[in-house]
Length: 53
Image 1 (cartoon, rainbow, N blue to C red):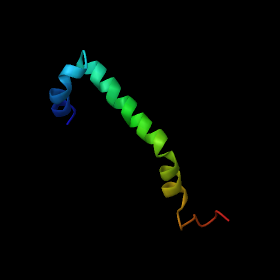
Image 2: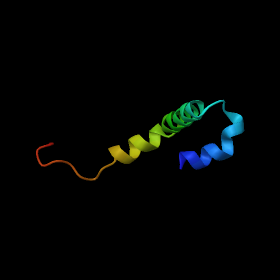
Image 3: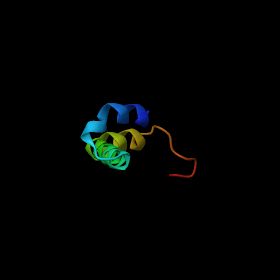
């Protein structure tokens, strides 16, 4: 998938490595932006382990 996106974005980046770094940065920004949702979804479990309480 990254190779396909790279083919369309070649003119914006100097190398494939720069492109990959930019993609990792965008993914990290997405996690930071939606961290409240991730915390809510993983923290709002209706189940607990047997010896939790």
